[in-house]
Amino acid sequence: MIIAVDGPAASGKGTLAAGLARHYQLPHLDTGLLYRAVGWALRDEPDGPDFEAKAIAAAQRLDAAHLGNLEALTSANTGILASRVAVIGEVRVAMRQYQREFARQPGGAVLDGRDIGTVICPDADAKLFIVADSKVRMERRARQLELRGLPVDRYALYHQIEERDARDMANPHGGFYKADDAHLLDTTLLDIEASLRAAIAIVDGTMARKAGL
Image (cartoon, rainbow, N blue to C red; front, side):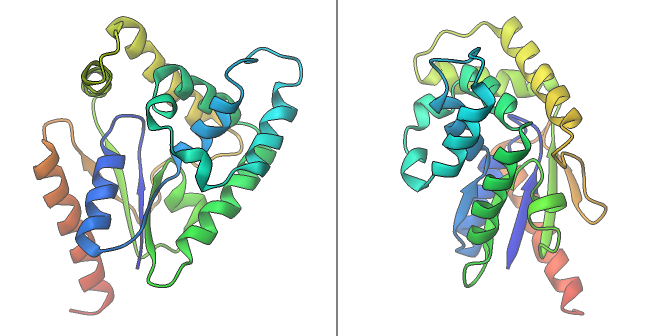
């Protein structure tokens, strides 16, 4: 069973995908970490003339060992770099291959990102598109950063989230939109437990309908 979970930053998609993976005993891939790892590799030269070429090279070298430094990869600045490398066509080609191989492993997998249900796994057994109000998403991300002892400028963080959304939706190489067969789940007013219960109900209902039950 392949479960695709898409949505914007801090909508809760990563937490829900991890919860679904535990519930259904499936491996989980946070595909956003792939782009963040590429962005992090270019942190010391974000404005260099060969930014694109170096991003492509970093994407082609990427493996699971590059995904371990979660504190660095989940920072706001790394998120900005990730959105910049994600609009490079050759980077996305390299990332797609990695993601599709992960999804095709025996038994299936849960993948979360921005184009899983539209580009990476258009034939996924169940698709969810997670959304939440921008201010709520900003506050969630701010609390995550503060729990790690990091200072947070909420005004700047809000605009980073808005800019990231706009950049991702305008990406000519991406597929950041709700697939026709994806189920919309708004987590604005839901806590983690309620969101996960709703997501499990969606997946169970989808699989039951496909089984003719």
